[in-house]
Length: 364
Image 1 (tube, rainbow, N blue to C red):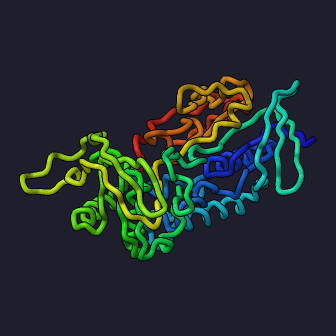
Image 2: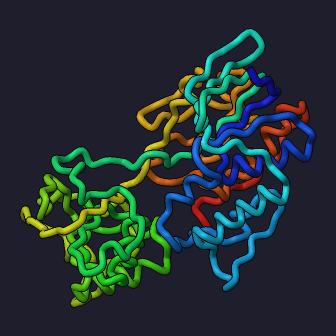
Image 3: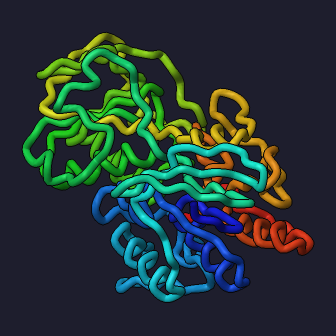
């Protein structure tokens, strides 16, 4: 058995930022990660750019610079995280998922399954920085498990000169539609509402999407839901759902609107591939194992905002995991940095840091 004062689970940006803070304060800890450093960003499609500006996603006081002075790509940020880990010589045990947590007389017993064998740790405290986008959300329709259906965009090149239906209506879906269209795919687009939520789509993407939809280069089927997926087509049915948010004035007379693309009848869309981009579900299983109270359908953990300690003494939570599964994203990297200072203050017995105004949305 390996003993430690604190076991930190998760090596995304907030987990790494907390590890740096603990190391600076001389606090003994062990850091575990189920996959590789920055696992969430690693799952992003190649060359995906952050919504937020570089200074807001930088961690541990280390500036983030990009070669073209623009917002960081997936590749930029993964290289940045590796450099922070190297700069501070952080001992992260990657590819070692936690498989069990239980209370013990002195704190907690934690079992893990690294690449070889199993390990057991004893810790007085646990910090869960496990993220909030572990598993893609499913539609739950017939045919969703067919081999030509995917829940993640890996590389737009895959769809060159192929008929592709993209399902979703937020940032990931719109960006995937543009990138796959640019790569030569024949793109159709299905979203359950008759208008897009412009507040949650990167501002530089929406005008291009609207233009391509209006020109017919992207076949927009708004106000539609997938009822069935077959090997060669997808059946869409009308939902009649209006836009969730009205962010733009009604179009002038004679001006087309995306709402013009809401379907009114059942339609079969010929496909070679289907890409489903309807969000992610947080994996709150470790919090549940530790006894953390999870509330509501989205499994939001109970915690003290001034210390980040959950209802279980000695168990802390940080990063986007504090929101469970987010239907509309309000908790994201740039408003989670404060969690690091709160946890360090709590475990060292210092007064909690002064709160600050959190950003309402990622900077754009």
